[in-house]
Length: 250
Image 1: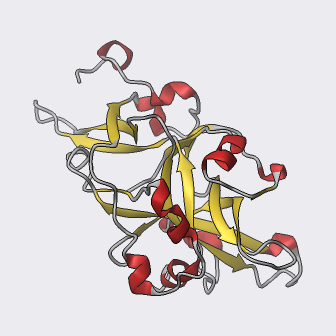
Image 2: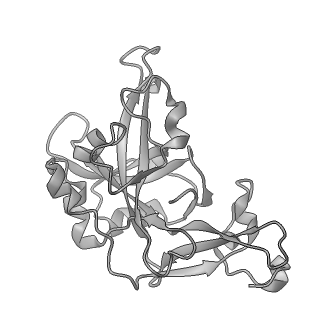
């Protein structure tokens, strides 16, 4: 699964790396090394520009935690931060977004916690790890986005609309499986165009894109326990922990 990640790449660099042609600097976000559910995130998606026309690749500010269009309340978002790749095409909460509202979330990497049993029979502890690309490039996480309208607000009121997203997960590769059995699905550049194409609305064809790259592109780094609190947010959260810094053995 994916419940926390780091995203510090400058929007200008995302625009270049992901061939974005439309971006509003007003939607810029500050770097974050501890993004949590319901936080705002930057996502790459492909939609017609305002005023109409052919779909263009855009960088947009969304909220993490998908709210289905039919939901009566946005409070379901915290439960829908992840969508399983094996059922995303059929689950009522995700299938419409999967059909034509797919996006990419550029992140530095994500955090995962491993439960480590105590040798003395005491309380197990949680060891956090940071997962990122070996080459240091941003991870392009496969996501879905959805529009939700607050029906208590006027239909033309901009604050009445909420645009949310979820991260697609898949079976963890061997390196990561001992920590958690699932991982976010990340994509390579050669599949970006197909994944983002809103015209690709055939479920079976879209499902063929739900394949993780071959193992070997990721690294797993034990990090300090400070990441467990969302009050902590600094670059040091992704640094390798040491026995001295944590007072524990690794």
